[in-house]
Image (cartoon, rainbow, N blue to C red):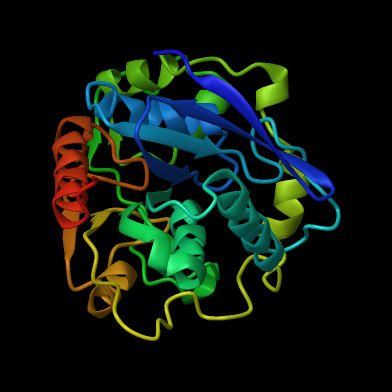
Length: 282
């Protein structure tokens, strides 16, 4: 299924996004620097055969087709923009919400502000604490390295595979099969890096997890036991906020959820089943 390339005109910026399918809205917030098109390549295999949902993949500022903006210089302002995007594109509709990595942190910020409209929350390898030094995470441990798999890699591939805990040929081929991005889809790395390297900018000024009351709609939290980027223990401490959450920690999985597609898909669809059951449409 080919996406519809869409634009949301907000004050002083045009936010680009892609949509797939028709039906109930499902808004998906990408990981830091991940273009919407790449995020769709990650998530759509779980959703292509599921009717009744319109998937909305957004490019925040500096991501994909949406340019960086000098007046958006921290995560507070980025969250403000995403909230304005929700208000403009969804116009008061109820929706389900998913966030990957840093996108899960921003998704919880959206939930903090618009919880009455959100029918369910899903998080994949979620950032709980943006400040690196405050994260409870394991050191990088390579569990599998097939003979010869690290030979003849490009510099970019070697850098990428250096973060992987399951270095198999199947995962390398999967990585190489990801779609090439056009130049206009690659985002603004320097703009994003300036925010990422500033501890005062790479966090919200309020606690996105300080909810007035627990979020009682269906939730899903998927983590990796060997995730040396964000870890898994911090997410466990959020469970009191989500009394209807399924929490999963996969062994043999780092931040990129190596070779876990066949397990993530059923979990994600079971979460959507629970969302549909809890908030049926007319």
